[in-house]
Amino acid sequence: MSAAVESDPVTSGWALFARYAHAPNALGFCGPASGVGRSEEEVRAAARRFSGAWPYLQVLARLTGVDDPLDARLVEAYWLGRDLGVDHARFGAELLAVIGPQAGHYWTHLTPELLADGAPDHGFHVFGVYPWSRLLGTGMVEQPLHVLDSCRIRWGTVVSREGDEVTVSSRRLSWDGTALGLAEPTVEQLPADAEPGETLALHWDLVCDRLTPDQVEALEQSTKRELASTNRRLAA
Image (cartoon, rainbow, N blue to C red; front, side, top):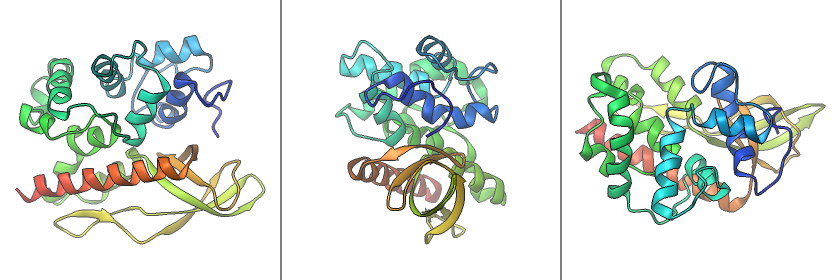
């Protein structure tokens, strides 16, 4: 779906990682300045320099007994929020041990209580670890909402295609002054090789992958879980 990798094997975890990590890396938000890379060797080297995703994958690998942090099962679980049966409290404690020293005094909200309530996936990192959700109640709405909506993985359905562009319908984030939610579907035009009826994964307004119904369900459930958790935290 993107030009981030040379090959497209369904079971290749490193290629799947590159698909989802390409958009924010290309925008300069995370990962090495040299890019994600195209070969397996390049992607594996780049993945270790993603200060957000890599610690999650390392801890997930340890807790699931998987040797490779870029195993496709772990990569999918991280980006789409699939439940691998990992104890969240234990995951949170181990993750805090890794990212806590890196965060320093800038992210004082990274407490054991926060991590214990978190999930081992990208959605939790976006809404719980990144500080943007905490800015919504300060009068700064437009930029935090844009970043949260762009950084999360969202799903969209192709409704039409014209040439190399597709029209995709998806639900953006909403903020009513007190809580986050999912707005009614809106459409946008994106470059993609996809057909009407297919559901796509979107990250920073770039297409990452085609999603199966099972993957859409996992992503939707994990997204709603994080929204509910974030709203409870903001209300408190």
